[in-house]
Length: 355
Ligand code: PLP
Ligand code: COI
Image (cartoon, rainbow, N blue to C red; front, side):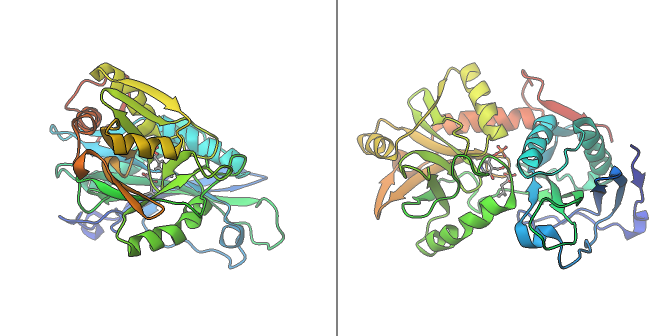
């Protein structure tokens, strides 16, 4: 399928701002296409960034039939633009689509559409250290009827915008509150799909913990209230010296692409890794005894974010004296080194955008 590209005239294009907060500025153009049962995907176009018109009865507004992805384009020192494992995001997008009874998007077409979009808006890929162009592919159910059932119409779009550090303090450790009462997702539910409802379910707790001065929530499994799952916008890893552990994919946590990259990169840096069922009581005891030497969250927006403090049932547990540690730093340097083209891409993860 071809993409109809309708660019703004150069004089109508905005300049990318010098400073930006995550997710608050958007590049000049967007990709969009529509799907219905008879025609499949149609009307693929790249056009100026603009509002989407929806019938007030559109299924996404009532029943939350929606999925999205989060990925980034990085500018190298030489001015080239790198995407990081984009086909892995598009495969996950399709797994989320299947779980939410939505149509799949051909992964190679998705990549071509993204490359065209980034090429057109290449001036929006920032070159400040640690910055990137955040990319948000999304699909919503647009069928106009209130009867509960999978929609018969969908819109798929991609928007982009410049992003700096997700957390305001950059690489400084974040404080995390362990949810003891509320749950985010359950095995058999939609926790491993990247669908808006998972995030909506997390907001109440996020607001509550923010009032207490914590920046993130760590979720426990919904059946036993005992096993560590993930943080609101990232997976979590604990470090025992040279050994890194992360919760195994239980079916209710997002299979993060950054998490998977760490599991593959860490052994190349001399660390051992394991995916395990992690009991919160054991983890807290290991923090207290000093066996756990570091903890960090990992995700596209968050990159690698050291965790310096966990609070559970009113008690605070400090990790590495609330300081960023060497393992987190080494992994951050290696991962971002590959993304920004400073280090060898041993796994073939980088896809270049020709501008
Ligand atoms: N877990 C959740 C709930 C997330 O929103 C994210 C971010 O996308 C992650 C984990 C990390 O996933 P990834 O590394 O693919 O960005
Ligand atoms: C990402 O890291 O890309 C995400 O989707 C997390 C989001 C909640 C900011």
